[in-house]
Length: 118
Image (cartoon, rainbow, N blue to C red; front, side, top):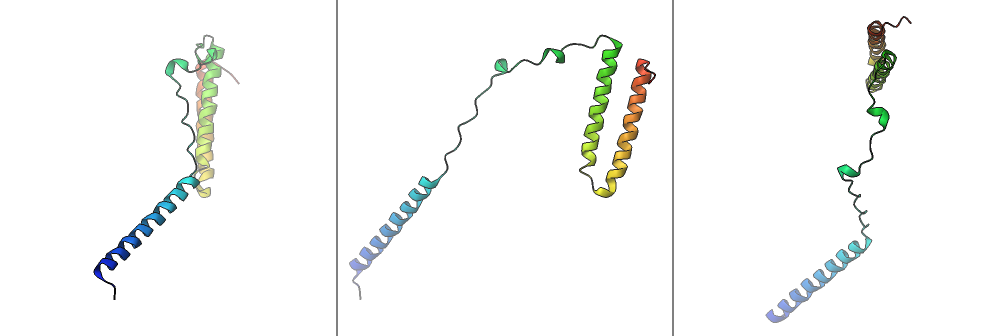
């Protein structure tokens, strides 16, 4: 049977072996870690590229106003069609029909507003 001082020596050696093994595992994991990418550069508000000039040009003629309204209606129709694709197949045909009717109504209103007879 082991003496009391031998038991404490065995416990001390066991603990030290455990902690040496644990530190070896941690250091091997640290060596295998993938380095983080560098942070993205900071873009300050005054360094942002300016908007294209056409975005700030106001529509002056009725033709320009009509064309802008038409483009907005076409864009709204596309957004609605994209939403229809997220619905279950059973509901998509109804959604497409409603989108078509709304688009046709908007275009008719735009044509009346600008006096277009197409």
